[in-house]
Length: 216
Image (cartoon, rainbow, N blue to C red):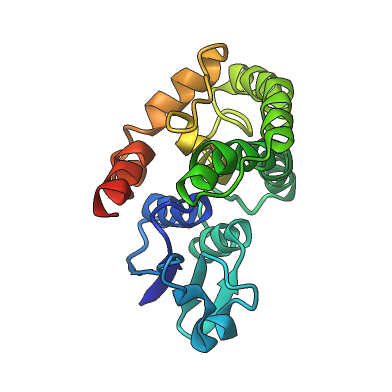
């Protein structure tokens, strides 16, 4: 059976789990405790030399980097989430790259400095926080206009690009990223968060985060 190594608070890990559910793939989920250093063991570093999550083991085929993983899984299933047509794939790749490089990198700066740095008693990098919010202010309108065109990020069909963006925006509430200025994103996100592929992963990122805090 497919094994997914991840962390509940890791957006990339949740991206892989959401994609697996959307593809109707059974998998074994193996939680890796970053706090306890399970990602730094010799065994884990053999799978991911940088000690990050997620990683999959598909019958001995080991793969890391969440976008590479979900493309591989969808290709194995020959799924319309990542169709074989080269032009359609290119558009999906385009918006997945846009999400990772622009929205995702900005969100990570905001989430880290508003949530995880204070939690770990690490000084907040105010410059990075400000820059992250500025980039979101610049790039989220682009995403909002794109979704308005067809209802989904890469066109008129739900695809891996939507799963990638959904996972990136998952911590919006706990990191106080206000999405209300982007009605298309709000509507798109609300609809997808009701789908089984999402609810099988978690009810919401905020719920998972609050559960994590309660266990501390």
